[in-house]
Every structure is written in structure tokens, then in C-alpha cells.
Image: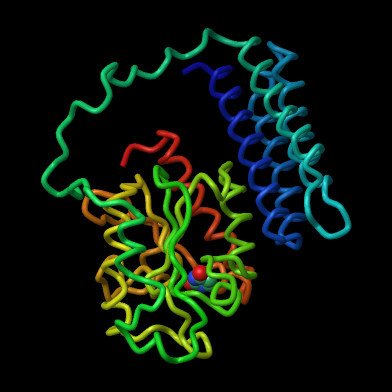
Length: 325
Ligand code: URA
């Protein structure tokens, strides 16, 4: 790779990462980190320009302009919030357009495009599933709901103040699934998973990944609210978990993000803690499992949002085929 190509790639990565990261920080409300990130982005852009000068940037003034545009795009994203700290969608979109323009003009002013990635098989999936993978289920999500019944009394949570059973929801063909612990007060009242404060943060995290809530599938290990939001006991989790596993066998997502210790320990049958395993893909019957912090924990300790974002970016990159794992 010559200096110009390396320089161009660095610019694109810089602009994309800085833009995405700033947008995410805005989305999830970590404004305090922005100042340092913004100057960091500008500083890195300057370094790239300096490193490339005089060899690459001088020989191509367009490249130097692109470097400055990359820094400006990153700056622009960080200055698009309204007084509540939330981004203006149009301005955020302008910033990503700016980044796109940087990408395009960098491509124009440089060497030929890289070859396209190899084509997928023309005839769908022809590779047989390996033995470690989850067998296809022949039941439906409705079958599972009917089996649970709204009056479920299989575990003590039936009779400790729950209003209703909170079933999973989402796209039955989702490539991405989120699994939490158990419903809280809002979920118990409305009968839907992750719709309270933690759920609103989860929605923002999904959007920051470039997806919508309707694209994914969302469930919990336990479907009834434990009193005072206590952690479900191992026996309660053991009783309810099979319904979740049956749903996983139907949906067959490519990645399951387990939110917090309880969900992770239950799905992976591990005694390790979330701090140790977060960010590293684990395996559940051939499905990638990404452990990360629970959004309720992120609300209590916003400094952990940065690590959670790293985990979500790894997940997104894997789904976009950018990671070989
Ligand atoms: N926390 C969870 O783990 N699940 C929900 O549905 C809501 C909050």
C-alpha cells in the first residue's frame, strides 16, 4: 500500500469513527466526554495531515483538503445538539453526508477502487449446519406464547405481585437479539419488554448501531417481574429460560447481545462475571453471543457507556461482515 492510499484510508477511518462515536455519545447522553473526543479527533486529523506532508498531502492538495474536511465533519457532529443534548437529525445527517463526501472525493483523488468482496452463493445456504449449531425449530413464537399462557404459575414469580407475563417481542427473522434479566415496573404494567428508562436507552443503543427496534428481537430470561426488582433466583431462571431458548431456536439470530450479568450467566451457563467477558464473542450453539453491560447499569454509571459502545460496534461490524471471527 502506498502513502497516498494509507493516508486516504486513515482519513476515512478517522472521519467515520469520530462521526459515529460523537453521534453515539450524543444519543446516549455522554456530553462530558465530547470535548476531549472532539479535540482528540481534530488532533488526530492534524497528525494525519502532518504525517502525510510533504510526501502525500503536498503531492495531492485534494488529500490535504480531505483531511481538513474529515476533521470538520467530526467537529460538525459534535456541534449539532439541541439544548437537551440530543442531536438534530437533519444536522447529524448533514454530517454523515459530509463524511460520505470525504469518502467519495478521497476515492476519486486516489488509486483504483479495491475489488468487490467475493459473491455470496447464488443459491442461498448450501453449507450444511455443523453439529454444534442449533437445530431448526418446527414450532412458532405463537406456539410458545400459547404454551406459557397468561396465567403461568410455573415459578414463585407468578404470585409475588406480577401484573402480567411479559413476552419477548420483535422481528421473528432478526439477525440480532437482545436478552435482559426480567421485566421491571413499566414492563410489568404494559406487558412489553424494555419499555421503561432502561428500554429507552436500549432503543438509542440500537439506533446508534444503525438499526431500528423493529429490526431486532428482544426478550428476557424471566418473564415475570420479581418483587422490588430483585434478581430472579437460579430456580426461577431455570424454570423460565427454556422458553427463551425455544425462541432462539426459532429466530436463529446471528448474534445475541446479553445485557448484564444475570442474562449472560443464564444463557452461557458460566460463573464468570460480565466485567471479564464483556466485549468478547462467546458461543451459544453456534450463535455468537456478545456480553455487555445492562442499560439500567449504564444509567447508574454513565462512564461505562463507552465500553458498551465498543461492544455494540464489534457486534455491528460482525453483522456487517467486517470482522472475521
Ligand atoms: N430490565 C430487563 O432486564 N428487562 C426488561 O424488560 C426491562 C428492564
